[in-house]
Amino acid sequence: KLIVFPLERVMEEFEYALDRGQSKVWFIVDANFGILERDLLIAQRLRKLLEKKDIRLVYFASKGNRERVLEIAKVLSPMCRTTLIGIQSLDNGVLKAINRRNIDDDIIKRSIKYFKSEKIPVKIDLIMGLPQADKEIHISDFRKAFKYGFDHIEGFALRLLPSSEIAGSDYRKKYKIETGFRPVSGLLGVYNGKRIIEFEENVISTKKLTVEDYHFIRVFYWMIWFGYNMGFLKVLFDLLMRLGKNPADFIDEFLSRQAHNFPPLDKMINNFYKDSKEEWFPSIRTAEEHYKTDEAFERLIHGQRRLNTKYFATLIYDNNLRDSFMQCLKLSAIALFENDNKKKTSQVKEKVLSQIKIGVELIDKLWIKFQDFSDKGIPSEETIKVKGDLAEILAEALNFSGKDLREVVLYYPEKDFERLKGVMEKFEYKSKPILAIEKIILANYGAHLIDNLMQYKLKAK
Image 1 (cartoon, rainbow, N blue to C red):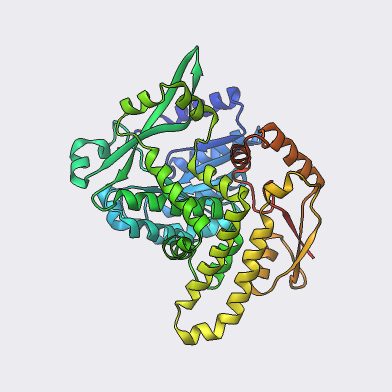
Image 2 (tube, one colour):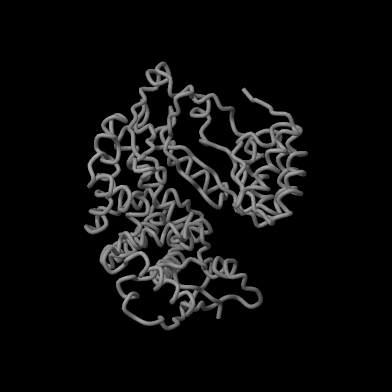
């Protein structure tokens, strides 16, 4: 049920926040924004307000009236940092189970096309653990999100709130929902001498999804998080899509059939599974008891708190693990094409293998090797030859026009070098390297591929 406040009250609250707030980015978290006729008027007035202080905007695009959604997009696009299309799942059976209507495919495609034409990143927030969603449906949702062309694909655990229908006992019984409790990242600290921790209850298994499959999907999303959203594998993902392969199928191949062939990588993934399972407590009471001890509380406050950042930091730091990862990337990508029929494979094999090899080599060189980087001066420039689809991807990313791109140069600017060295020292890299890299990751989250502090820069030659 929608609760509609008077229009003037809405505008007065905007003005109140504008006069007193300090944030330069506003979030409209109403997933139904655009569903009402008056929302277009709100968007027009909101734009005039925010332009006064050069405030950027992030908002959810409604799944409703497609013409109004696009009209609102045209009004707000000049100040948008990113736009979120409010979709919890792309599977109709899952949507029916959570009382959401089917998604209009045309709305999604037209919205994405428009935002991309305005150079505004489009984001989707998928939820892991929804009723009726098994392992294959989760992977299918990620696959569809890549196919639609979303620029940012989030995967959130399903949090149960006391007032929500899904948290009710009847709903839990119907779908055999099992949950776990954990601290909410960032919502903890010491206030007036008292330790405060906010806990959340999340779904970790259902009638359709086993606990083991849930943790698999979590690691699956981890590769999307750092590989696509943060851009560390985006060159390879974009290359695969241009060659007709979906990154979701590549990740499935990587985790399900290839990673176990590389002992360092297999060990890391198993440790991820183990940590993921041990993160949850059966009740708030047991979680509170655990964090009453000084050791547990201090580790929570000052230690690794997010598994995504912990394991990506480990991957970047450990050169042996990283080498195994890169080899597995190459074999997993090649395997996707070897599964094609022999005639097709023979026709494209040489071209595909060559581009994949160069793409993985480029990714490996782009990632800073912290163990080498920390004790050396500014790295020297290096030239890499590129061709085919890979050259087109890089030319687009570098806004390169004119002649065909043949070579790219990897370099690291002096100002970035000094900045990174300062950040490493600030975060006590020498004594706590993994934790320091975690903090650098979080400080750089959302940075563009070529601007990220943890990667070399690229320029066309």
